[in-house]
Image (cartoon, rainbow, N blue to C red; front, side):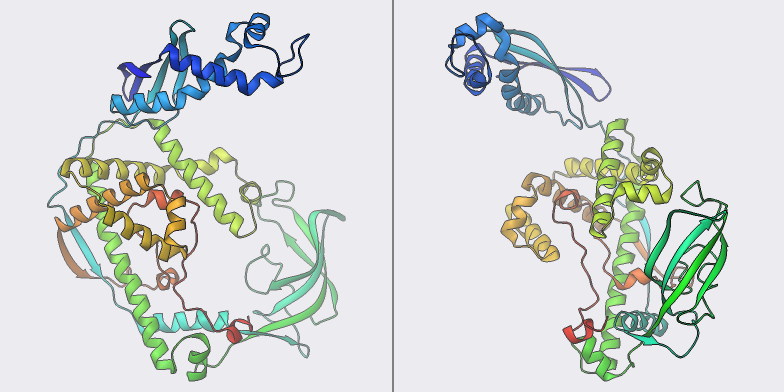
Length: 477
């Protein structure tokens, strides 16, 4: 096997001519014969017993060529790409240009490759680091979330429905006096005031008592996902079966013991404050890195193949679908309820995909410029880190995440560290506007560094930072 030539035929596109000698080709043809002989019917012979020469005479000399080429191509192509020193970003278009027992096989591969990248200055960049603090309100806000997660659900019977109640209802919807598809359910739990149902639906249940049968009148929103219902008035017949409320636990030392490892509420609140601060510090670091990367991308010059953006969008769509499946849904159902076509949905990822691809290319260029190397110790440390994040044995995660891909990620992260370490960073207190509490700040955010290999792996899981409640506490939910 060998590379005959590698010619750049247009921007980011190469044509490789690859040959496999007659001996290796003959060996591959023989393997193809042995693999397929039993499938071929030859008059006068039992299946699998006809000589190869007879089969070739009957069906043509090239009957086994396709299988032979398919078995030879992957290795031949991989070796040719390595010899040519190119990095393909898409599948190659293959064309067999010559094939015979006497000469072997020669084929051409047209392949799209990573673009040449020209960077501006990436040392001495300037960025502002916002310094965030944690207020008592934010700690109390998080405490309320924990209380809600540990609330007891109790039934109420002696009053009418109120906002915040969980109503258990039967309902059936009618358009012009006729029931419509998807408009009926039994024993449906609905939190009144949650905005789960269309406007006006929940409000009209408030004030009714258990056992009542009544009707409510609503109008579907103009932008409702079902075109048959959008903008139309409807009548729903309701049966109110049950009312429930959430009973929140008292905020005291016993509560702290139930939901955490701490003995007092003050200790637990201090831990919450510490975790929120850590999340904010992480956010601050991420903002600095993002600002630096934006400057690098802004001065970068490269003609990026469209296929690189499309592949990035593919990965984002697949990841989105995976997360939907974890919630018992799928992408097809989501798009139906969102009233979107796939093309429209993919466009929502375009800006993010462009930034991701440009960032990766820029950082890989810095890796090359600075000649960063990844040691075995670096690789082992990253595997251990990922194993801890995903709760998977380190040896198992090595089978999931390819070492070469992970090495590239580690090198890219070294580039981010290099840019940050060589930047001029000034600190300033966060303003009131940027200092507002974000619920997600009490949860760990994903590492801002580029970890493509780990994101593409099967080891996808959500790391929770709020402490697990003890069993007796979780049983209350």
